[in-house]
Length: 360
Ligand code: NAD
Image 1 (cartoon, protein in one colour):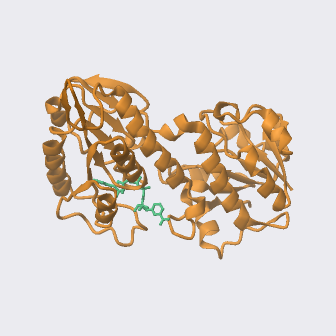
Image 2: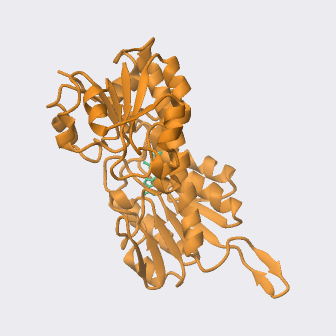
């Protein structure tokens, strides 16, 4: 059985790194990689070759591999090239693009969407959303620090005392918690908002203060995700965010609700009153953003406030992001491949959730 790794069309990452070769071999499969697939992440063809992964043309991978892997989905015209009954593993984001499943159903291929793996303890080692969000949270703080014209830690110098930077984190999920930890390490004073009561303890354990807005909708039964809040709640929250934002220097915005537009938490009015020189990094930009002026994939200035709308920050640490993605992939392959044979056993909750379209 042949597994093929495709070169990404719009990411710097690669889905499988050369160091994963030993484990792939132990699963009893042969692996091939598209020419140049790992270059942007620092993994050259030579390194794949030295690990018995043969660099090959894209066409060969699409038409010959039994399992094809890419992080971002390939274009529709390439889907028809996939081998009959092949398995194609990617990130189709069906929660965001509801029409995607009907499109995939037309092909005689098994489609697995890594972003549909349940967010449970059992599936943690395959959870690409968590791996990538964690890196994005870290990079968001470094980005903010870079745009910000002051320093993070309190410093007592002969020329005077510099107060610590105040960072506000909106959404204390995977990215938010990593942002809190990173900002704390840099010496900032940090406070965080979340609608999930469970987030409070995690925020406090990282040394940040938790800002509670009473009356959040119950999220039990949402699989650990947040649920949509009422307009009344969001209005109350926006008022408190504004109060805190006026005293903050940096906002890292990560608040999202699966399958919905991100909640608007930082209004135009808030930005008009924020201190000039403040920085907002909006990791929710791709789902609409938490901030009124966010432009997805762009960095803009409004009233002296820098608003960074680059939401795929994991791609800017492409080496480590590829390594973690590759580890997540290996852990998933490990449950579907035994002795060189694939079994998509839907009695397994992880496989059942991730298999979004089956071969006819
Ligand atoms: P996400 O990216 O969907 O959202 C980010 C955060 O925004 C979440 O914490 C959410 O509660 C918060 N949020 C939503 N609306 C908000 C609002 N109006 N104000 C403030 N915050 C708001 O979340 P994620 O980081 O992907 O994590 C999703 C959930 O899955 C979390 O509960 C996380 O703890 C859980 N999780 C569990 C595991 C596991 O058990 N293996 C692994 C990863 C994540």
